[in-house]
Length: 535
Image (cartoon, rainbow, N blue to C red; front, top):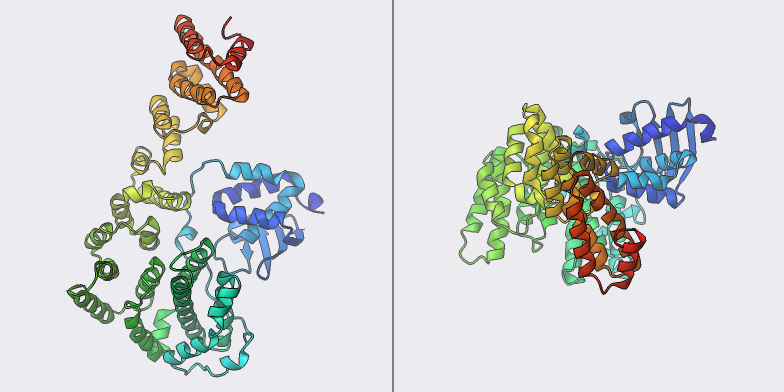
């Protein structure tokens, strides 16, 4: 029984580690696994380790180190703290506390703490399966370590000959990703570097298949599951390239690398102009094909293509976007960003691989330069992307001895930085600016916790009035009894604020004016009388 093997305090401390170290959407997935009953064989050992099995696409084995959370592990492919670890935590937490209460805490605004782990790919190095793939093991027998890269692509065409039909008749994302994962078993007995290179080619092949399917079958409509599959393929491609020993590959399998380079010359001409293929192309050159002579050759070819007068505007823009990547590789960031900033279609996610690479190599000034240039995109980014950039940005400011400036500079990243900036203003007792920001961005009164509201009420009672009055008008505008009751409660706070400021005469004029304005709202008038707000 976990109740005998663990203490409530241990589980609460584990929860704190989950909040600090894990991505919110991963914790949410873990909660879903827990509620679906996917966690079993949970055991605590010596009060120091929590072990479990979690049913996902396979059964994964989890071990949580209660004394050093950083040492916690799972056998799945996700390189960071995964949903299986989160699911195991919820199983233990449920013995002592309500997991829904923890989810409420999770969803409260908070800053992400920097960790070097957030700078590396989200998936681990591809692990060889050790078994022949199904359903066509005989097909795999035709491939050997000495096979050429062109043979790999011919094999992949045969491997996927029925995939388009399967994607049309079943769930396309599952069919495609299963095909990709299963084909990796073909290389189970190959040298590791070569097996990793094959996984790169298999990934690119399946990404092209996905894009062709979307174009031909879905009329270029990317449904959410297909978008998630493309994102996952790109993430796994980055992991495969990140962990690939390129130097060893050049030394022992130079012919395969040269063939890969030759094959890459086709890829900039692919019909598919989606952001996923552009991301894959950049990753390939960043991690694998980064030989100076090859880079210069590719840049020259892109320059020749861009100058072709018969190109369409869309084709010229695509080649320019690709060319800018090589400018970054040469350290010419300003020229690259000038090209990319001219494209309205590039979101913050497009720039994140570079920014993470700069941080990994502790190029903090370079990272901050990119932050300056991407200020608008950061300010309008979604939650996870903003929190990642903000966490690394705070680390960069600290490393460069500029932490004292970081709080005030959060204003640059509004509205994405609303929570962080408001926290900074409140901590520094800049209450008027704090409330002005809440008003400007239409934040509800609930943005403040009761303790914050009480502090402002005690120290600056009239500052809350604009926010309270706006909320009162919104509640009255709901035109229902519950809204009127809530408005009456808030009006009592307004009265208390005027009373603390010794301005009850102003209060009397305000409440009489409000009662007159809404004199036809009988139910509202009743709530005002019930609350002794009017006679």
